[in-house]
Amino acid sequence: MESSASARPVILLSNREPYEHVRTPAGVTLRRPPGGLVSALDPTLRRTHGVWVAWGSGSADRETADAAGRVAVPPPPAEPMYTLRRVWLDAADVEGYYLGFANSVLWPLCHLLIHHLQFRDEEWARYQRVNERFAAAAREEVSRLRRAGGPDPTVWIHDYHLALAAASLRGTVPGIFIHQFWHIPFPPPEILHLLPYGVSEALLRGLLGNDLLAFHTDRYAVNFLECAAQLLPGTTVDRGNLTVQYAGHVTSLAAFPISIDVHRFESLAADASAAMAVSDLRRRYASDGRQLGVSVDRVDYTKGIPERLRALDLLWERAPELRGRVTMLVVAVPSRTELPPYQALEEEILQTVEAINLRYGTSTWTPIVYLTESMPPSALASIYRAADLCLVSSLQDGMNLVAKEFIACQIDERGVLVLSRFTGAAEEIDGAVLVNPFNVDGFVKGILAALEMPAAERARRMHAMREQLRLATVFDWLNAVMARVDAMMGTAVLADAPARP
Ligand code: GDG
Image 1: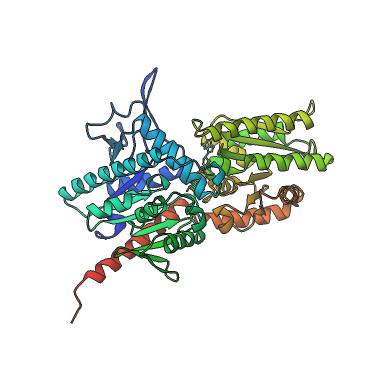
Image 2: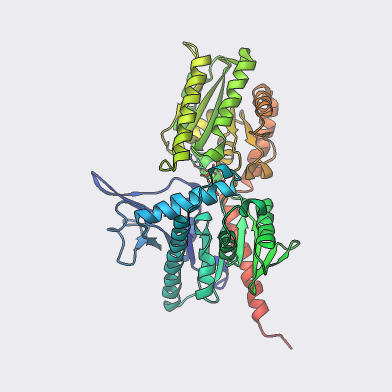
C-alpha cells in the first residue's frame, strides 16, 4: 500500500553509522558494525530507499562522501539502495556529546548507577548543539525527498544520544511522523530529577517531540510517563492509554522488546565449522564431566562483571568439590576506553581474574579463561553452543541480546541460562534461572542450581526458550514497530478527514 509507513522512505537517525570507511595501510576499507540491529534495519532502508543519518566516525569517511556528507550505500560493486548522510563531529564534540553527556550522564542515570554520573555544563551544551546538527541534517533530507516527489518520509530516531532531535524536527518540519526507540532503561522520576534544573525538562520536551516513543518494556514506558507527569509542568498524561500530551501534541508510549536475527545465529551454530570448534572447545574445557560456563559482554559497569566474578569466587571457596568441575570462559571486549570508570573497571576485572586463577587454579585447570579480543559472530556462536551455562549478570540492562544469542545457538539444548532479573530479557523470557547480582549468596545459589540441573530439565527449559525466541525475532520487532506506525498514521489521516454526511 503506497501510503503505509512501511512503504514510505525512512529517515533513520542514530549515533553509529551502518557503513564506516577506514584508512588502512592497504588503502580505504569498509567496516560494518557487527550488531544485529544494523543488519535488521539495513533491509528497511534499502527497500524504501531511505536515508540513514549518523556520525561519520571513520578515518576515511570524509573522502568517501560528497560535500554534504552523503554517500550512496551499499558501496560498489553492490547496487546503491539508500543514502548514508554523515554528520561531522570534531574532537570537542565527541568529548562533550558522546563521551560526556551521553555516556557519562545519560548512560549511568538511565541504568540507576548514579555514582558514575558526571555532569558538566560544557558537555550538555555540546550535546544540545550536536543534536541540533543531526536534526538539521534530517531536515535537509526531508526537504530533498519531498522535492523529489513520492510518498512523504517518516523519521525514526534511535537511542539516548539523540534525545533532543525529535522536538527540534517537530518545530521545523511540519506534518512529518517522528518516532524514537530508546534502547536502554528509562529511570523513574527521582533519578531523572538528579539532573540540574532545566536539563531533565529539556530532555523530556525533546522526547515529547515524537509521535511514538518506544522502549523495550512497559516498565520503562511507565517510568517515562511518570517523569513527564512529575517533572514537566503542563503535561497531561493518560496512564491507561500510555500517552502524554504536552504543548498541544500527543506522544504515544509503547513497549517493543527488541530481539536478534535468530535464524542467522542458529545457522552459524549449526555450521560444520562451528561443530568442529564446539568439539574443540569441549575437549579443552569440558572433558571428563567438567562443565563449561560462558559470558559475553562489552566491558561496562552496567553488565555486572565484577559481581559475577565475586559469585564464582565464593562458589569455589564454599564448595571446594566444584574446583576443577567448571571452567568459565569470560569474553569481555573493552569499550569506551577513553573514560576513567571504564579503564578502572578493566583493571579491576583483570586483577580479580588473576587473583581467582591464582587462588584455585591447578596445573591442569584454569578456573577463568579471560578473552578480551573482539571475535567474529561465528566464533561467538560456537562458544554459545558449546556452553553448559551462560551467565548474564547485568545490574541493569535495557534488553540484553547476549541472552537471546545464547538461546538461539543452543541447538543441542544442553545449556542453562543464568539471567539477571534486572534485564529487559528477564521480563520476556521464561525458563532461565533468575538471579539478583547484588545478592552474592543468591547468585551463588543460582549458579549451583544451574550446574546441578538434570539434563532433561535443561533440555525442557532450553527447548521452550528456543520456541519462544523463534516467535520473537528482530524482524518481528521491526514489523511490530512499523505496524504501530502504520496504525497511528492511519488514525491521524482519519482524524483529519472531513466528516462523511
Ligand atoms: C544496548 C543496550 C540492548 C559482544 N562481544 C562481541 C560481540 N558482542 C555483541 C554481542 C551482542 C552485543 O555485542 C551486546 O548487546 P547487548 O544487548 O548485550 O548490550 P549493549 O551493547 O549494551 O546494547 C541493551 C541493546 O542495546 C539493543 O537494544 O539489548 O540492553 O544496553 O550482540 O554479541 N559481537 C562480536 N564479537 C564480540 O567479541 N561479533
